[in-house]
Length: 496
Image (cartoon, rainbow, N blue to C red; front, side, top):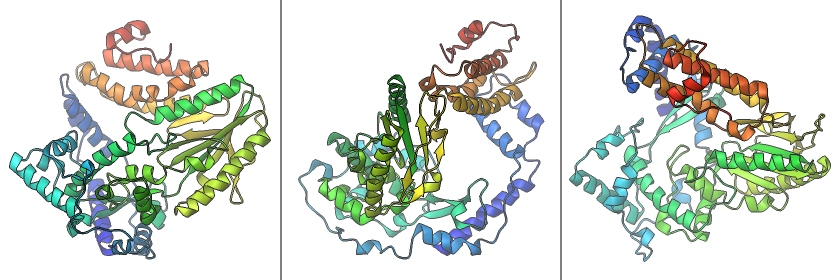
């Protein structure tokens, strides 16, 4: 495995060097010529990606991976972890079952799993999704027969269980430290399709039997980050109305998916009466089944702390909070919850990265009191704001930090629109509007309504960015009324 990772890293480094040396890959004039009115939006996006790559200057570190590749491989597969054959439960022969979820997969299920899949980087087999999607009916039936055979006997081909792991350096991290690299695992496409088939059944079973925790909003149909953010912002405003403090602790579980204890997960699935054939536990972080299996793994986490405080979960992002008239009572409640949570995490092979955790006291008082939150003797830093699920929550909940963050990100999108506009050349307004929705308006719409009413000056700045963008799209003058621009572009006001 170490040699394979090393070779992939060397190939990626060589590709990066070729990319940096080829300065004439894309010129500005060629880019502008392709942006003539009527250009399809797909071409516009492709040219923007190419143009961004040609302008960005990357400092690709050319270090010796032999100094960190062994530690990197040990992090992915610790030497202390037993082989899969050592697990206490494994079936490798045909098991008859009367459960309908243990029956063989149908062609309709396969077509449903393939529906909506788009090509991504394949694994060792080199087969893209489109190969099977566009295959004949006979080919699909042959593949389905293979999957059903593997599903019935619990046997997976060895080639399907191998992944290509690519280490990618995180921005601004030390290239000589193995923890600075993010592992990207490329699995077999055929295996991922089989995982999609299992995921559909397993997800239906868990949702139908209310197995998932009510506080878990991650990777579940019909639920999103907005549900979790809406709950916590509503509780904060209720505390403000009652003149109370609300103390929140926002936790970071370190490498949660990588440290799941497979025997414990398997035992939990058996206790939950999940059909035996659906207990399919192989696959690294990034696997199709990983988020679903993690939700099952943590289904009882909320039972440990809900008697002390409220809890919100989005996959491995956890928030604990409690409102009270006394800051001491709120801190005591949260410290008790963290003690019990720490015991649960130890039993499940998980841990909290205390330096990445933060505590915030939400209050309307002019002077924000400091809370005293600790985890296993280490103090959790008390901050005035925290970024939770992409939304910056400040202690006053006036939204100024988040609005400033949105303004900074939106300005980059406005520059993209400006660079594609011209008098005798440029992208069509229809393409410009699509770009605006993707790189500007999307920042406005994500969570900002939860902070309304907020700081009026910050809201006015966002409205000005909207009017600036619409003028660029339509080629209108600065004196054009904003209401007319919104009607012409069918773009509603950001705030009412």
